[in-house]
Image (cartoon, rainbow over the protein chains, first blue to last red):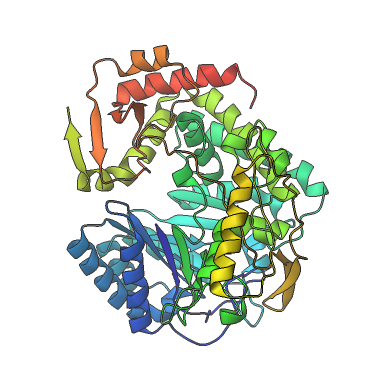
Length: 379
Length: 146
């Protein structure tokens, strides 16, 4: 169960590709936030981990709310026995030592949005006056490294920055990111030339990944690691797939309900707004959303990549293909390239001790807490 | 989507009348699916409307429609997800030989710790068996086209 709270639409940056609603200066009231938390606990089946994620806008603009909300969530966790994982995605510019200590003490996973070295990052991640935010993010990243055991980075690449991905990856390794997420700009116009380009770029990324392990440097990279886990488990399970309006919910600052955080936008006028936490859920609309999840592209059903393909991601499909249950040509090419290079990486490193250690830890540590809380009946 | 031996039936209905009358109509429509002697005609969905999203017209979204759901297939028993689909049962049994079988309640899927499924139980792999498992998957994968 994933519950994403957009705590504010306000942001101190004005990134060019931001999908996160209009920049209205309003913060989620604490009472509304509590109702959302209660909703999450009520909807989550017993024993299932509830992922509460704070985002925005810039969530650190309402740090007091985060503090109060975190305490409330932890109390509910103890009462209900349902395990909780907390995370926050931030542009990082407002981090302070005090805030970092709080995140560490409350076990909140921190993901900092940074697109790569300065000449890439400052192409899109700008202040409202047009100045780049790179220098400030880097300063706060250093602070995060001192105060946290680990931090993740999230980079968005678009048609203009795709070719820089290998350089971006190298940069992230050098700054010591514990986990690297590379995500395409789903609002960009991806033209035909990018389909061939992405294959070449991902091949370079894969070579870099393999070389790192051969040099005894561990590397956690979402696009490759996720696919390798899929090879091990035999493909996506039902539980892995998009749960729009079932196991995945996004909430805007005024309490409007959406089937995914990426749809949080134009408040109640959005056709994907499913009601308000302070009122009722629009069940007719919810029914339509649920009916249009998954992938209904007939061509995908005979594709040999299907088992490992993320063609079911409703929000990506919606923004890139116009429908939640139909895949765009870009995603198709991107997924094929990712699966192909991940297979090559897997076959190159399957006996590498560090690589095996990485996946052993990756699979075990994160869910160790969940398993400890579950009732085990060992024969 | 139409697959072999499977019908996905959608219909768009405009109805005016009382609740009781509609319930009767709904019943009749539901029967259509099961009555194979009735020709089933796929009615095109209503015109898709472009929608405004943050001032930008993005894609389309279907109009509300009545969707007649086909009966759901029976659910598999909990815990029998074919996790190790790449490996045959002989290889799998060799890997898990001697390891304790565990039944886990209250997780509802989503266990990420390396494990294999045997009927309604799972076998959590230790580190050595995990390495063996990875090697087997790699060998299997290298022989297959994705």
